[in-house]
Amino acid sequence: MTITGTNMSMIRGDTEAFTVSCTEDGVARAFVTGDTVYFTVKKTVSDTEKILQKVITTFTNGKALVDILPIDTKNLDAKPYVYDIQIVFLNGTKKTVISPSVFELTSEVTYE
Image (cartoon, rainbow, N blue to C red; front, side, top):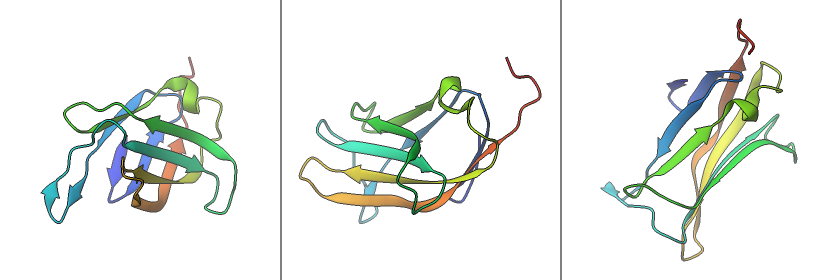
């Protein structure tokens, strides 16, 4: 996976993972039980269908691990999509911490 700014690129059908953490006023804020982190991919921002979504409710050292498995992307077209990351905190506050950005799937040579 390549991450440039907030744009991501990965090879379709691969296994990838990344960590989401949070700060408030420049201070690290650990995720706690009751928080939910959403990683959502769509064809376009205005599309209602989710191409891929990961919902994380368990955290390691206060951080969310987003695992993308081969089954998540192997049947998708190799092309650019859009994604964002939203957090719903235990107290009900919602924050989109990564605004809509590019999530690009590239082709692979070995398709096993």
